[in-house]
Image (tube, rainbow, N blue to C red; front, side):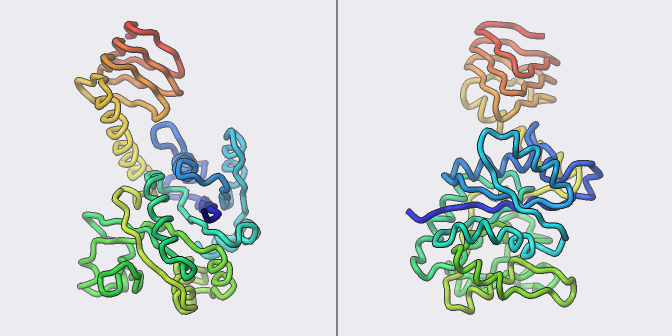
Length: 318
């Protein structure tokens, strides 16, 4: 088994959030988006993780220090693009030479362990010639995303075309770049040394390393995730609310599948870390969070708040 590591980019300020905390710490179902990404990475079997922080790094580092496991950090003092952010983690990358690294956005909470693992297997399938595997997704409305253009319709990636540069035919493509990538760590380190600033923006783009790696003769492929939500992020509180609604309904459906009755989902919010026994009824406007454990045959609500409590079987809470 090859050595695996993960690099999570979390330096964005998220100015449109109008928040005093960095965007990656904005919460989806009571958990920072960065926490969702870290959970997915660890569930995929990766323990060596580095988070690239930015101007509000103290808050991110404080959150990371509260976790029951170690996460390394690297600091990006200037906002000079995704490629520059990865450059700031060069020491971490050099320490993991000989393996592969997955690079993820800390504000894309719906990337999942299965997608990370399956894309890694696709990366390994290229053997010693492996360079990069771009994780893609097929979406209903691809507007604004970079389009994945495959060579002759196969696994090999021909290019990623941004919206403003795409032809009408390319704009019709619904397979888009998720912003998540597996790289051969050695090839990425070599490519970062050749990366140059964009003449238009003065920034270093991580996607430019893909062409550098291809030019070196290494394989550059695309892996399409089954999970189309893996591309979703939030740039403002409206989009954050949309992510919360997607996550809320996912959790409710999971509990209902396991025998929990939610006759009306209006206002019902349940955290991801909550456990609920079968035959329990959750009534409208109830909020359950903080790792609460609800027994079997309970009745919660309407309008109840259960925060971290253990509720025995058969209990009614209003």
